Amino acid sequence: MSIKIKNLHSVYNEGTVFEKKALENINIEINNGEFIGLIGHTGSGKSTLIQHLNSLIKPTEGEITIDGININENKKIIKESRQNVGLVFQYPEHQLFETTVYEDVAFGAKKMGMDKNEIDKNVRESLEIVGIGEELYEKSPFEISGGQKRKVALAGVLVMKPKILVLDEPTAGLDPKSRKAVLENIKEMQNKLKITIILVSHSMEDVAKYADRLIVMEKGKIVYFDKPNEVFKYEKRLEEIGLAIPKIKKLINRLNEKGYKIEEDINNIDELVNYLERKMR
Amino acid sequence: MKKVFCEKVHYDYTYFSDEKEKTIKALKGVDLEINEGEFVSILGINGSGKSTLAKHLNGLYKPLRGVVYIDGINTSQDETIFEVRKYCGMIFQNPDNQIIGTIVEDDIAFGLENLGIKPSEIIKRINKSLEEVEMLEYKDKQPSMLSGGQKQRVSIAGVLAMEPKCIVFDEPTAMLDPVGRKKIMEIIKKLKDKGITIVLITHFMEEAIESDRIIVMNDGEVEMRGTPVEIFTQVEKIKSIGLEVPLCTEIAYKLKKRGITIKEDILTIEEMVGELCR
Image (cartoon, rainbow over all chains, first blue to last red):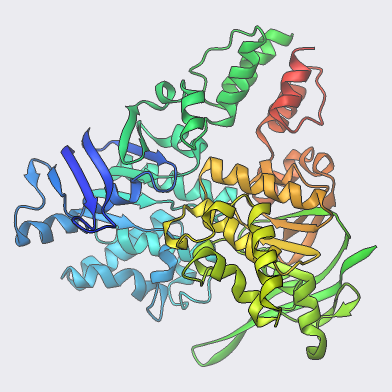
């Protein structure tokens, strides 16, 4: 599904002494099936923005349309569009509560009124996507490891078949291998199910690798909205606003300053190694 | 001097499932020695036992078998447990779970008041510890108004105010943006320079580079021990455990494998640039 945000303003505690502008004049268009990375310093407005996408917060001013429909039009539409947008918050594992992994994942599907066969099919599919095997289905969600809990919580959102999936730091606290596994799964879902992904992350490496385009936020405004390679050309500016560029870009920049002529668009280690090998032979 | 000493530490988690008692062996005979003033990183995948081990270092957990001595005190003895906790402070991943005060200085005062320290001394310590983490100007702010990195610095100040000799950081930067992460690492290094023993649990290999020594945990046991260079140059082994090596170490390793002459013990971007621009 495509998302269009037009002239969005958001003010907290309007009319009180605590009034705070959280978002100012946001204009974005996200295409169907796109993988968007959303980055910014804590407090830059990322969380406020994503909470608008399923009407947890309503715009003070401006409009959000998903597939051409204003999601805040009326109560019925709010409810319907919420079913399209799956939100995975930070530490989703804190929301696990059922007696077994299987039941926990099934909960959302039941609430949506799916029939028994459909629930079973979706639960199995979702758990497979996140890499949880059948041997864990009957375990209590409280007796599995932290990384596994995270994956189960993610499956609990996938089971509802969202068309847009918004993930807030889904890999924080995961080891490198699980981190990669979760992100690869998300990427695969994007390709397979053609869903739109918005990934909020503090890892520049991750967004560089997986996102088609990046939204960079600072103090409630959008600073950049472009392909990762374009955004990461602004090393200084990104550091000023509390971000960074991926390590590999940093290495390339330092080497180029010393007279190397490495292409700026190189993103992965093997391409860089190939280049250096040619140069050093 | 070995101020942190673990010998053959075993720890199990037991739980009930289907009305049967089940056991997970979280630590299987861990030996660990840390010298006073040393900076040691603990690496390992999720579920390898890192956090369980960390919680033994200030007596939150007591070994099922084996023994843990902190500054010469056996952590299994209830009478002296407060001595252990005074010696060794802990910082966890999520600052929101550690901050309880409604304003920053109250939060730091909380631990001190519980120790029965007199008010004039409390004020002194609050100022000193907030200055240490560069948060003094936020003294009368509400913690909820702070960024994640700032909250984590307040948590650190709260621990510093208790004047511990050792601080265990359990993934302190997992939730932070790049600048917040950098700041926490700067503070950790500063504390090390002041002689505080640091134990850092992390999934960021770039942070572990900064330490004197690295311990790699795997399935409840210590799999590797050594300096950052000794650990990270074992690229295949690190990867087989499910971890990563720093970017530049991997580049050097790959070039070497293709027959290029290059130093292997490269950890940082600066070292790599130095090597390539000789």
